Image 1 (cartoon, one colour):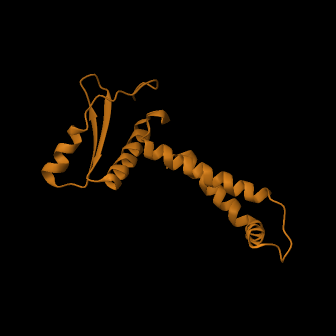
Image 2 (cartoon, helix red, strand yellow):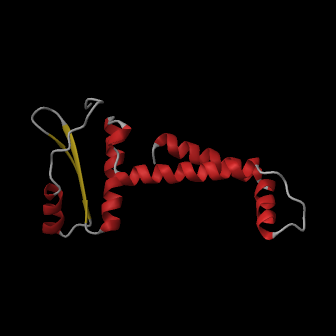
Image 3 (cartoon, rainbow, N blue to C red):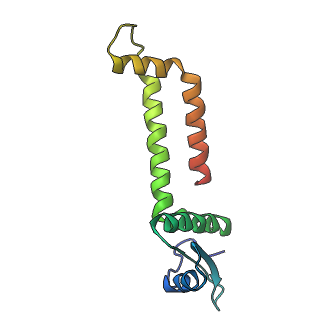
Length: 135
């Protein structure tokens, strides 16, 4: 298991780009260990979307090995931020006051959402679980 304070980031992307280009691959996710026993994970994708998917796969490897969360790719951090934002919005909706029928459309929407509180609470629970597992 790597030290918790800092994971080295010393392998260049070209290490993963070369087999991608040579073999016509879409993604390369490499788990390497140097002579000191230090693990390195390098990811590369053919295009922006493939890079993102490879980065997320590399993050799953990092979690399996036990790397700290501060080493996750920007894609995983963005994903977690979106999950937190969705959870927070749903939690705020649950605290809004009930609106009477005949109110403006925006207020009717909020009323409908709060009437379906059990669905929202289950969604919040799923978001919380996804955040804990670091999806």
